[in-house]
Length: 567
Image 1 (cartoon, one colour):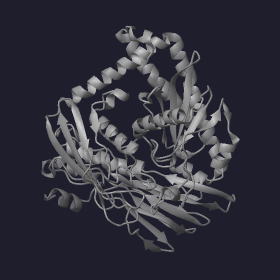
Image 2: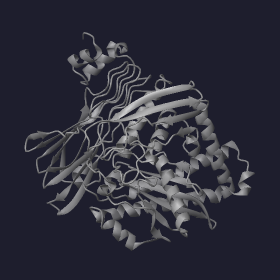
Image 3: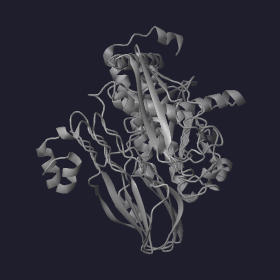
């Protein structure tokens, strides 16, 4: 903050306008990215995020409403990694420079989440950083799509990039670009995503420059400081409604993909005054497979979980100030090189959030909910289409049921806990890849029983139309369903079955496998989890049960068994 900004007084109307204005800058970056991106996972599934970050420490200033929540925390650490790199190597930064990085140990997630970080200069001085994350369909590694269920070291998961300048004074570095493109599949298609990602940041420069021109840098600086202070105060006020005490919860990852045993997340939350203290030290040790979580993702998972509980607190660095997180060293939630991490952002993050929900349900029973499906359902299919002769990588994410809550049943086919990403329209995937979706339907009978039942997951079937392919998947909740709350039942399980030459194959790890060979006519069948129920099942009204039966959600026999009554 400049010295003159300290004395600036901002009236409430101007403060509200600037708060919305900064968020709108990020929204426009998100939209520019989506509209220009080549990959369906960005353009259609919306797996991306943009934000504005502090010039000195990388703290979050603003993120758009359209960005993935899990990236809120992780991009803070990514920007900090760029700042640290600049200081360590005395790097000179110019307008038009753009750093690229995806190193999970430097504020990242998995290797497919590629970050761009750009310095924003105003009147000749570095004023802030603009950053975004886009999920690239492939960054190399053992399997198409990067979700290697059996990886035992990060090098097997793909190309790892420390912070390096991909753009220098608005000109792309062809040498860096050639290294990247030489190490990933379907490289010619990534150019479109790279240019879209850079264009989104350029859009942010223009829009943010207009805000500063109108209100002045000192006024905007002062507004940012005030908004941070107010967000911290609002979060502390929310935390103040929780009775002092210690609250514990747990959640389980099916397996790490290599050792077929569950991993435990032990969450202990101590509420003291206006602060929440998080301790996960009792969790499972580091694992051999790719379900280790880097610390940036672990922290961000707690941020987003608390934001789910208190959704009306605005998002910036102040929101997280009252959350004291003890580093879970010695557990699989603090991955260090070379531990594999491809499942951390999409899967482990949601188990961390589920453990937070389970703990806080004891403190705020009327404000919490049954656990949501809690898996992104990551499925990658790669091969070469004999019709076009071109290679492809198709990435599928899928929705699931939300948990029931004090006000009603959970919604069905909702987005994952960590974001707003949605399944790419099946018509787009059928147009782009040699596949046919033979089914896309509700996973009936998957919502957990309760006074308010959980929502339903989905079923889908994909048939390979032509050529040879391989499939890999990193999903979860194949062993245990999402937890119910206040006596509600658990949601239904995630299931995977592959029909090859008419013979069924079920992965030994249930939700994780890789390099499954497929031929024309083979079918992949997936059912995603339903949400956990809320409240004792015996309290559900008979009218609600009859309505569910009439809609075909349950048979009469299934409903009678779930609710323990004669129908």
